[in-house]
Amino acid sequence: MSRGVYARRVDDNQKELTNLWRKMEVSVLLLHVVGNGCPDMLLGFTDYQGKPVNILVEVKDGKKPLSAQKLTMGEVEFFNKWQGQVCIIRSKTEAKELINKYRLPPDDS
Image 1 (cartoon, rainbow, N blue to C red):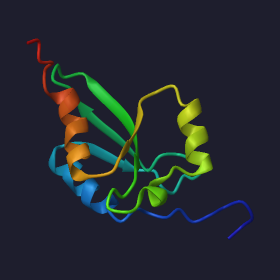
Image 2 (image 1 turned 180 degrees about the horizontal axis):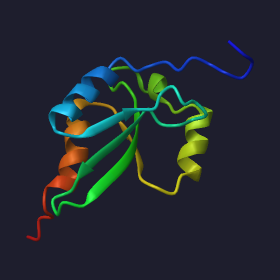
Image 3 (image 1 turned 135 degrees about the horizontal axis):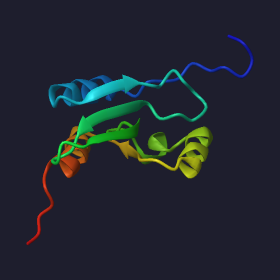
Image 4 (image 1 turned 90 degrees about the horizontal axis):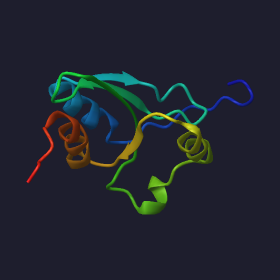
């Protein structure tokens, strides 16, 4: 490997979350190989009004201790500078909630 290039570790739950989102008809682009703090995935789907939504997602394994779920320095820098939508997902529950937040109309009660 050349200097300054590191292999990106893939979280244990990344495949599980990718499969879940694809079953929910969400486009998933794997970005973990990009490096430089770039989040692991780009999700694309339509909201409840049929409008396109794109969200960058950093996957962390919620089954691991909090110390093992910390963002790297590069990830922190990316999150601080990115002006678009980016989030951290740690479980299938959070993965479903993220999509449903956009796909379900707001509750006006």
